[in-house]
Picture 1 (spheres, helix red, strand yellow):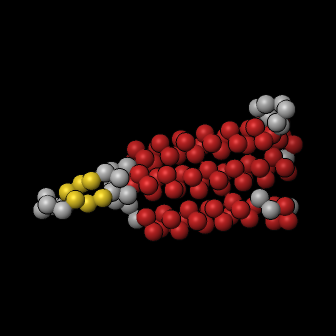
Picture 2: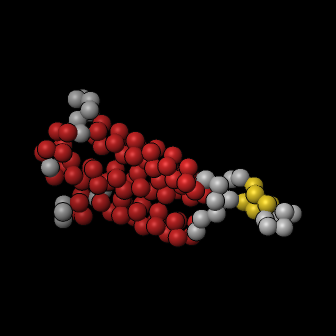
Length: 114
């Protein structure tokens, strides 16, 4: 976190944009991983498109795409939020919602509903 000074110039103010970018991008990466795993299980076309390394199968593409999206999102959000104060409560709530959905989608009984 970067220190800034307030308007009067005497009290440092901590920014939280970098942390918010990391939290939100990680949750989004988990959600994309769950969605891609679900799609690869239910679609032969997507499954074949996600085979980047034959011995691993579609898991290689699922994890690679999710990691690349996570890193891209983290870099993008860090660039936009890095030196700002953002509403971390709302970002955390949204991140936890994405994490909960990700966890639910990885359970076969719930994933099989789709």
